Length: 111
Image (cartoon, rainbow, N blue to C red):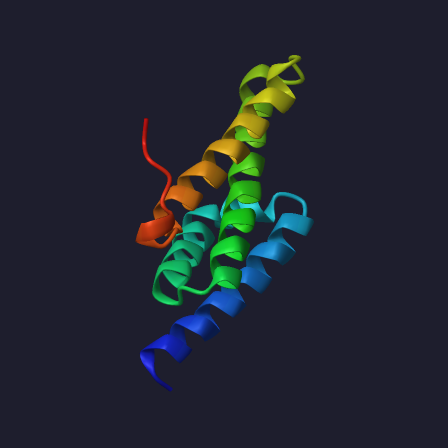
């Protein structure tokens, strides 16, 4: 098994686990310090469009869930923060991953 195949396998397993944890009640929050870096490394090492998009979506949703939990614990159900903070986090992660994982000729300029 070559290096590319190894990262493909690690990425697939991590994507499945992260997706399952997002569907569970709070599992993604607990596992985020492990799953997000692994998804990032898998997307960087196995640079296919599918891996980049999957890592971006799963990391954005995981980040949104973590921020939702932090917002809920600090502000409870305070509107609009309970939905605004996770939404902003999700958009920020998508933009960051789009910028950093894109091939050099497709990278968006940083303003």
